[in-house]
Amino acid sequence: MGTDLHLEKLVLHLMCAGTPHGPVKSVMTPLLRGYVWQSELHHAIFDALAAAPSGKPSILRQLLPAKLTRMGFPDVEWEELFAPQGLSRDEALALVRRMLSGS
Image 1 (spheres, one colour):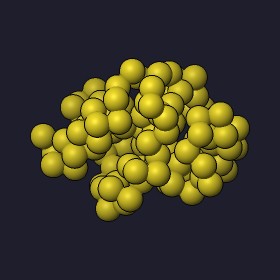
Image 2 (cartoon, rainbow, N blue to C red; image 1 turned 90 degrees about the vertical axis):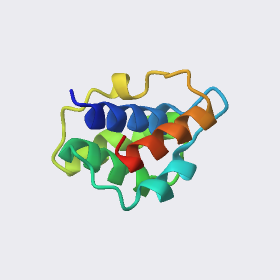
Image 3 (tube, rainbow, N blue to C red; image 1 turned 30 degrees about the vertical axis):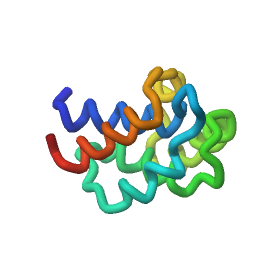
C-alpha cells in the first residue's frame, strides 16, 4: 500500500475510533472536505462519516455499515476501522496536515 493510501486509511481509522481523548471526526471533516481521495472506498467511507450526525464510535459503528452498503461497499472490514490507534488529537491532526500536503 502506498504512503498516501496508508495515511488515508490511518486518518479514517482515527475518524472512526477517535483518540484516547475522544472523537476527532468533527475536527477532521472540515479539513478533509476538499481532499482528493486516492481510494474510492476511502472516499466513500469519508462521505459516510461526514454525513453521520455524531463522532462517537459507538454511534458510527451502528450507522456506517448500512450507509456504506447502500453506497455499494458491503464488504468493509469494520472491526479494523474501529481499532484504537493510540494517537493523541494533536498527532491525528498532524497526520491530516501531512496527508493534505502530500508528504
